[in-house]
Image 1: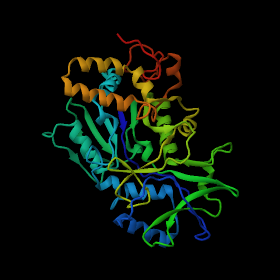
Image 2 (image 1 turned 135 degrees about the horizontal axis):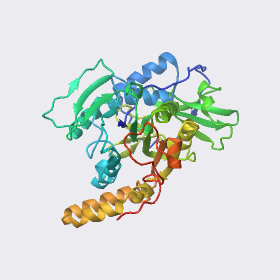
Image 3 (image 1 turned 45 degrees about the vertical axis):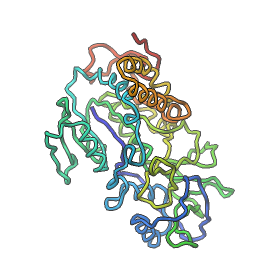
Length: 403
């Protein structure tokens, strides 16, 4: 089994930036709440020097630098998870989330499995290791290897950490990408009377240590990613997500398995979603870079186009619907019956956060890739873990009978 977790692989296929470093026009976008004073961080100084040397940079390049720069990147050096961090993920909100997903493991119970984690952040990989392994079992570390860390889970399953999906061994696999794609770098484009113009980031001419959004004065190479029939006036495109989806699709088509993608996103309807989070609050993306998480909603319609022809896709469907299909109400009742009053209140609060349409219930989505024959009730020839042909509906994407 292969697993993708939150983090970026740094393999963005960014087009060369050939633009004239003048005649830029200022532009404002909704990037969060700006503090009264701009904090001059090491990352801000790095970006200012970079822009002075090479000219304005794309939003994709900005995200990549801020999040994964080896020396100053947010994911490389900060403790960002949990109540004391900047964001919290679904498994941390409630144990119900994990218990619902444990049902997916039933298809693997008769298999000889291993776990492969793709994670660029050393901080996050250490947190994962503490969660998945016994501390008394030492981890194998090799910073120069494609497998930079190895261990054994509490249940005895071998687990390995990689920085790039391409390094993960190929074979029959189940891939889980949970809040993975929303931090990959996006290119932003604005429709103008002169046509599409890419959004760049430049130094504010009025304040030497402040950044601002600007529009490119002419066409940039990245505009090839915009659909010809696009009707929105602002678009975000993530070429790196397209590359990863194509790699996953090729693997699944060749050797079987499936991929489940869970993330904040939309089906090609939203416009400006680029935002920052610091201390669980919205944070201006251009202020104090390196101190806040950066994210942009996943465009699932783009992922579907990238997978088209190689594998079948399902979704996106809202988290509320997916978890209900997976039996979250049944699991909640079982847990409530076994809990004392403080634990019951905690369970109900977590359930509300996961299912309430005004919270994560409709903002978080689930999307799946699987072999075409899976939807027609035929087992893949490489699927040695199943004794019976696969049948629809696919777990989570259709109503199931719960006893």
